[in-house]
Image (tube, rainbow, N blue to C red; front, top):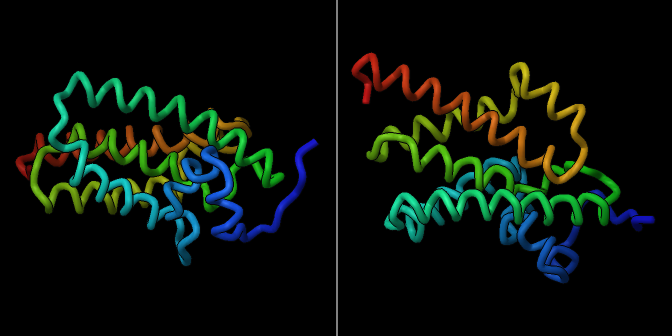
Amino acid sequence: MAKKNPQHPTAAWVFSRPSRVIAFGLGSGLLHPAPGTWGTLVGWALWAALLSRVPDPWVAVILVASFVLGCWACQRCGLALGEPDHGGMVWDEIVAFWLVLWLTPGGLWMQALSFVLFRIFDIFKPPPIRTFDRRLKNGFGVMLDDVLAAVYTLLVMAVIVRMGGG
């Protein structure tokens, strides 16, 4: 049986286990308000610093591996917290936004627009995202709803590019 921890985990709690460090986005999930936004910003920074120069086949491998790692980490962390999708768990935002950045045309303005769109879709969870979010209460469910928000973002970005905005 999982031991319930405080709703506001401390840095000491997060940094005590690798699964928690990952699930809390290297600690960015501890930032308030809006930990999901902070996590997405960390994802953007990691993309700019590390992943943007990686060849596409390796980015695909990194995304799949990071998704699987996130399923494991968020499952363990959610059980430890007694809350399957705690707001501080932001690895899902990080990985999903990497997907968006990978497939979004270059340029800071397009990345900024994709950031705003991704946060809107992640926060408001239009159908069917909300359905998956409510029904899948495990690490996979935590990761999946953000990937779906990324897909919505990419669809809107494709329309923008097609209409000459990119």
